[in-house]
Length: 257
Ligand SMILES: [Zn+2]
Ligand SMILES: [Zn+2]
Image (tube, rainbow, N blue to C red; front, side, top):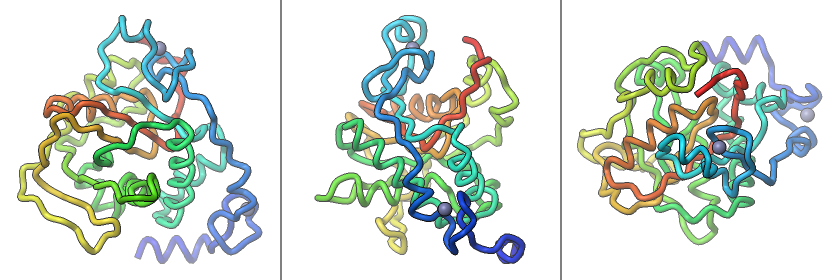
């Protein structure tokens, strides 16, 4: 119903140029730049291969994330509008161009092929409200297209058990880490496969994560504290590497360690 109302109020037109009857025309899509270099996810000051944590940050602070790949800039108003329209106007079609950007960035950065993809979960209340998890939509596309030879398994094995205070309201990185501490856990319900989805998604109790290389996906990161907490939860269960990737990063230059 809410979608019907929104569609009537805002008929389909390109978010960039408003001239075509599509949410994003080819021309506007082609203007979005995917950076060919990545920076340290913690200090955001040093260029590092694949967005790994730089050596001075490694000395200062333990990180469970092995890298963070960012596909585009949130300063790009088109990216901002696309993510907003996906999440708050429920335009699921926009997951596709966003996933394409993410895919381009993953291929450019030549990350090792992951054993599985894990989308960052929403709190059940948020999931009911939106009707879908935008990170899962991205994961499905990436799963299909990351390598031509196979579909990478998607595991919906993490759950968000606390409705935490929005990270946006918190300035300090350490306080953000504290805010998300312990909010994720691995599901313990019996494992099922959502075969109506393509590629199929494995839900419930996690398979053995020992020595697994995991690609963790989300739409947006700010300080990266949420991804860090997911990574901590997965590494506790034996995961070997956590490569995180997001469509865009919202930079808050003011936060301090
Ligand atoms: Zn356009
Ligand atoms: Zn750094």
